Length: 145
Image 1 (cartoon, rainbow, N blue to C red):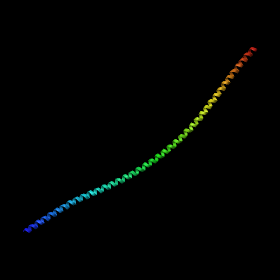
Image 2: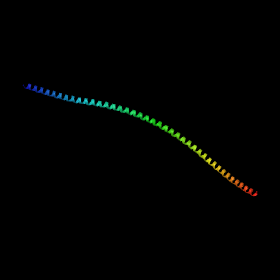
Image 3: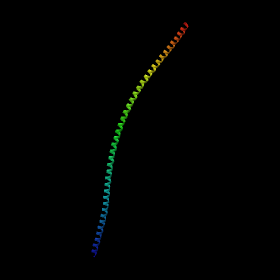
Image 4: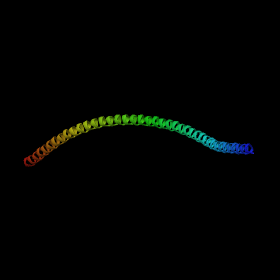
């Protein structure tokens, strides 16, 4: 009977150890399953982040190309503006040259006018002198008659 009791106790111990092992195995399976879920979630996040990075890189490429296009356009506009400024400077210089010529022409016309005025004054003085001589001659002729 004692050996039967020992065998029963051994069997109970073995069953207890087996139940404990199964409980540990079940706990480890749950932990393992949790880790698998976390790993799958991490892979999904990594894939999502990879997609976001690719999208951001594509947006950066587009933004860089747009900026380069705007810079080229600005360079073209600046070159055109410089060309316009150069043309306007040439026009201003031409206008200044025409103005200088006009000033010379006005000065020459003023000189001609002064000369003509002097000639008119001299002619007026001669006419006055001739008128006086004519008047004196008439007066002298009227006395002689």
